[in-house]
Length: 193
Ligand code: IMP
Image (cartoon, rainbow, N blue to C red):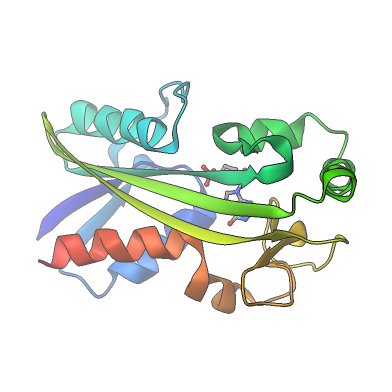
């Protein structure tokens, strides 16, 4: 059976991805299976580059084809930032609520409501062979913080054609439309062909 390494330490993501890969004749490994405890610095300016830094690192260390992802939110009222700095931006506030209030205030000031989440997955198959798959979900910043599901910016993001924030819908429903699932589907499509 062929092996594939998922370069992530995030337990939720690993469980989610392992579930999806169960159907395939592939042995999906994560970092603990290959004894990698260090991670390279994700200091690039794009999701694509950050994902590639990680998938190249995993391949170079193990020789096993490796994929990695990088995601975040881009918000119109913040000049389409924080992007690759999404996690750090949130952590700069005393709590998530303070961050969300700051974003909502800014939207109310200039009326720029649009936002999108993006995921880039990089797959390193060989030393100089790399493919990137992108997934996006467009929407707007809600007027209020709502919902208790999900994580990160979910409580202030309403997907286009929806009325609820991503934190008000179940994880199953979110997975049907999310940026991450779009990118994962493209990866799976590639691997099955
Ligand atoms: P990561 O690259 O998937 O770890 O995502 C980086 C950061 O982007 C997270 O810590 C969250 O703040 C934000 N983010 C990424 N995906 C989502 C999502 O699906 N919902 C809410 N926030 C997200």
